[in-house]
Amino acid sequence: MGAIGKLLDIVLFPFFLTIALAAPLMDSQLILPHGLYPDYLINLKQWYTREFSDYLFVEEPNFFVGLIWLELFFQWPLSLINLYAILGAKSWLPTTCLIYGASFFTTMVAISTELILSGKASDKMLKTYLPLLGFSVLAILRGLMPPSGKATSESESAKLARKKKA
Image (tube, rainbow, N blue to C red; front, side):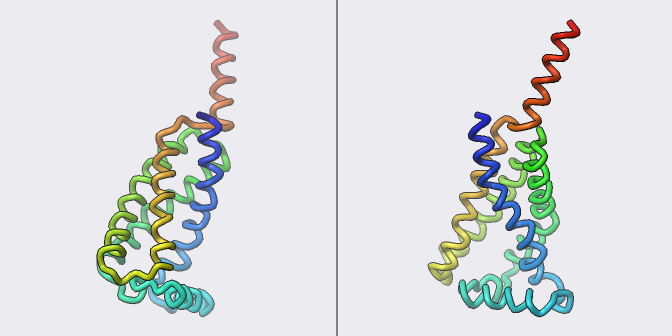
């Protein structure tokens, strides 16, 4: 199980890094005044919206804006915590991954349902959003696995120390 956990950590790390960067730089432009952002970030968001025909960023439906608030105040900090936990091989990574994965899965199910049932989403937009559903499942799976890496070896050394005392 330790090897699978490490493999999931390797796969999830770039995902969490992307969320850690995209949430405050791109997604937050939906809810905060544009004057807070430099022109190149505003242009990047406009390019993305045009390139991927992301009508959610253009129309700004209320449910989507609410999910962006959830992302910024709950999921974004968890992505930062998960990055730290992966780098530091923290024993509590499964817990934070499970919390993040369940929250992100719920978000992505709502968005995916809108994309598929509305008929407004381009193929390119679907190919951008639907893989995120898979990453949320991977985060949940990582959350259901035991901790791996340095944290496990530290607990094993603690067990050996206790055995030597006894």
